[in-house]
Length: 395
Ligand SMILES: *[C@@H]1O[C@H](CO)[C@@H](O)[C@H](O)[C@H]1NC(C)=O
Ligand SMILES: *[C@@H]1O[C@H](CO)[C@@H](O)[C@H](O)[C@H]1NC(C)=O
View 1 (cartoon, helix red, strand yellow):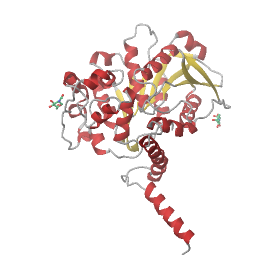
View 2 (cartoon, rainbow, N blue to C red; view 1 turned 45 degrees about the vertical axis):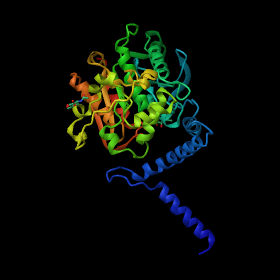
View 3 (cartoon, protein in one colour; view 1 turned 180 degrees about the vertical axis):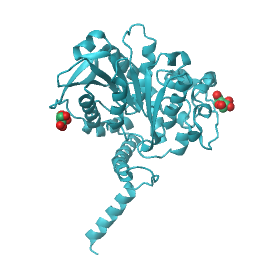
View 4 (cartoon, rainbow, N blue to C red; view 1 turned 30 degrees about the horizontal axis):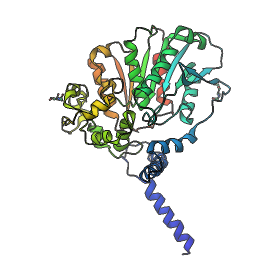
C-alpha cells in the first residue's frame, strides 16, 4: 500500500470514529442524526478550545460559526417577506401573496438556541415560517431578541414580550389582515420557554385586550430548579443537546459567572429559602410512570443563598414557567406540547402537561418516541398540524 492509501485509510477511520455514535434502535434516521451531530460536535469543540485558550467566549465562537446559516428576507412567488421592528424589536414578517378571502390566522414564532444563539434569519427558521405562511394562509411573525452572553435575563423575555404586545394591538393586526380571534404563539426549545413565559404573562396584563388562541410549545425548557430529572439522568450525553450544554445555556441566560453553572451541575444551586418551589418541579409526583421508570426521587440538596441573591432570575417564573402557581395557569389559552423521547428537556414538557391537566385543561401532548432534540426545529411538519387544527376555527 502506498503512503497516500494509508493516509486516506487513517482519515477514513478517524472520520468514521468521529461521526459514529451508538444510537437507540428506534431512532428513525440514525445516519441523519449522526451527520447533523458531527458539525455540531466539531464547532462546539472548536468553541470550547478557543475558550480554553482564552481567545473568545464559548458562545461568541458558536454564534460566529453559526451565522453562516442566515438567509436574506427574500419574497418568493407565494409569500412576501419583510423585516421591520415591533416595539423596537426586529422581526421578520411573512404574508401570503394570494388574495385574502377573510382575515387570516396569525402566528407569533420564537426561535430556539439556548437564549444565546439562533436567529429568525437562519435558513431552517426562514424556511419554516415561509412554509407555514403559505400552507396555512397565515401571517407569521418570526421574532428576534437580544441574546446572551451580551444580554441576560430578563432582556430576552422582555424583547419577546414587547414585540408580541405590539402585534396584539388591534390596529397592527389590521395592517397585516390578521383575525384577532386566531392568533397563536409558538417556539422551540428556548423559544418554547419564552412562548410559555409570555403566554403566562399576558394572562395578567390588563393592557392587552386581544387574547391568544393557542400556545404551541416544541420541546420547551421550563425549569432550572432540578437538573436531575430522569431525562437528564438517562440522556446526559445524547447527541444534539447534552446535559453539559443545556446547563451552560441555562446559566448563561442569567450570568456569565461560571459558578452558577457549577452549582447547577451538582444540583446545589437552589437555596433553602426557595424550597417551597420544589413542589412545582417534583417529578416524582408530576411524571407518569412511563417516564419515571425505576428512578428514585432525590430532593435536590440546597446550596448557599448567594447565587440566588446575585442571580434571582433562575427562580423567576418568567424564566421557569413551571414555577407558575395555579392562578397563573388558569388564564392560559389552549395548549399543545411536543416532546421527544431522546431529549434532556423531555421531562420539563411532560411535567407542564401534567400541571395543566391537573388544572382541568384539555391539553394535547404529542410525544415522539423516535426523535431527539432539534429534530423538529425549522422542519415545520408537526407544527403545521397544530396550527391547522387549532387556528382554523373562530370560536
Ligand atoms: C407556490 O405555490 C404553488 C401552488 O401551491 C406551489 O406549487 C409552489 O411550489 C409554491 N412556491 C414556493 C416557492 O413555495
Ligand atoms: C415529591 O413528591 C413525592 C411523591 O409525591 C413526595 O413524597 C415528596 O415529599 C415530594 N418532595 C418535594 C420536595 O416536594
